Structure formats: structure tokens, C-alpha cells
Length: 156
Ligand SMILES: Cc1cc2nc3c(=O)[nH]c(=O)nc-3n(C[C@H](O)[C@H](O)[C@H](O)COP(=O)(O)O)c2cc1C
Image (cartoon, rainbow, N blue to C red; front, side, top):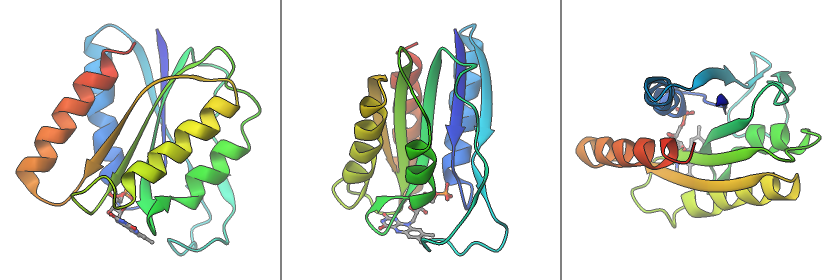
């Protein structure tokens, strides 16, 4: 399967998970490309004022994994804006994940990934799975990443 991993990552956490997903999916024989959404260089994280500089094209892929951080207990506005400008995700298999700081999913993670899923479904995607990675606590985080990589990779 031709899979696009499309992420927004400001400090690198979401990207580090994406790299593990990429390795796992490639090892399973998929063709995988990791693409990053970018904004203007002088952007202040959390601000609502930004321009999307790189908007990865989704049409080339059969399936997508979308990843983003939680900001202010919600989906990072950059990812929200990117998703909103996609014309259609019809017939695409999609999985979504978020990374956040707090150890509990209800402290922003659940709402943020729920928002991603809702937008993707509204654009016609078949959302098969999702994941939330709390960054606090190294051992706990590593276990959660390993489990999520297995879970999301098995969807494709
Ligand atoms: C502006 C801003 C707001 C944030 N708000 C939250 C939050 O509400 N809850 C949380 O758990 N983490 C929050 N964080 C932490 C990030 O979600 C977390 O560090 C995430 O893994 C960063 O991903 P990245 O390295 O891919 O950018 C916030 C970070 C920033 C920069």
C-alpha cells in the first residue's frame, strides 16, 4: 500500500513517533513517505496567526497517517487548518494520532484526536484507528509508542 504519513511537529515529538511508524510500515512491505506541514518561520506556537507554507498533497496516497501535537487542550491549530483545506479524503484509509505532555488522555489528547477524526470523516475518510501519546515519563511513553506503532501499522 502507498502510505503517506503527514504530520505537524514543532519540537520533534510527533516527528519521532512518525519515524518509528515509517520504519515499521516499510518493514511490512509498504511504500511510505513522511511529509511535514510547515508554517512561516516567525510563527509563535499556539498563535492563531500563521500561513501554511508546506501543505502535503494527499491524492498520491491510498492511505494516510496524520499526526499532530495537542496545544491548549485542543488539536494544534496548524493541523486543524491543514485538514480543513483538504478538498476530499474520499476512499482513503486514515489513522490519526496526537502527542501531548500530560499523562492522561482526557487532558487534551482525547479531544484533539477526536477533532482530527471528525474532520477526516467529514471529508469522506474511513478512519480505522487512532492513538494518543503522553510524553511525560520515559518508560511509560516508550511502551505507549511501541503499542501504538503496532496498532496503527496493523491497520494497513
Ligand atoms: C503552545 C503549546 C501548547 C501546549 N498545550 C498543551 C496542552 O494543552 N496539553 C498537553 O498535554 N501538552 C501541551 N503542550 C505540549 C505538547 O503537546 C507536547 O510537548 C507535544 O508532544 C509536542 O509535539 P511536537 O514536539 O511534535 O511539537 C503544548 C505545547 C505548546 C508549544
